Amino acid sequence: MIAAKHCIGLRVSQARSLEAEPPVRIRKIAYTRVDAAEAFLNVGRQHALMGKRIVIVLGHPDPGEGRFCHALGSAYEAGAIEDGHQVRTIDVGRLEFPLIRTRREFEEGVVPDDILAAQDDIRWAHHLVICYPLWLGTLPALLKGFFEQTFRYGYALDTGKRGGTVRKLLKGRSARIIVTMGMPAAIYRYYFRAHGLKSLESGILAISGISPVRSTLIGSVEKPDPRYRAKWLETVRELGRCAQ
Image (cartoon, rainbow, N blue to C red; front, side):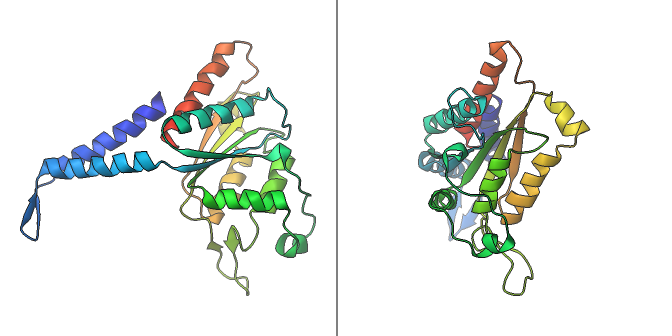
């Protein structure tokens, strides 16, 4: 419930800060402190009613049922829909696309139909959720290949004809990365420095304008106690409710 409480607490604290401000007069119409707070809350209610557009990228290469990544994606989706958000899902393991092998393919190659559809979904989204298992310290090769196909020049970023300043083409979107792993999460983040995660955050998402990028590391996923996974599923469901 931490995520939901944080969302509510943020709105309340912002409203209180408005209440502390003195009355403002515009065109001889006085707005009281209560008016300001109520106006803020009304904007929050309208945003909540509209909801966010969310795309969940399932990055496990195996599209079969029973993968924990898929369960996490379903939990996030359920929470988001409960709170009025719109959700689309890209299951990378079910897409058909080749790996890019040359710079010319990256810059001028024909974009596969499944990748075009994924690009449309990402363009539609306000928020991305990327969930994948940690393989050899980073994201699986198929997911990396998906990003190489999808985040092409002219779609995610533009260096211009002369290769000058990079122009970020996916601004206005945020992201949440959820990574599962066998080792304790603290070992990956602080001992191994989470290099694979950082490469995705900065080298793919941030450079394309996606910000902020938050991360959730779920370690020790092979624990035999089913309550451990159930707790994480509920945590991710709460993230979905807050669209974070």
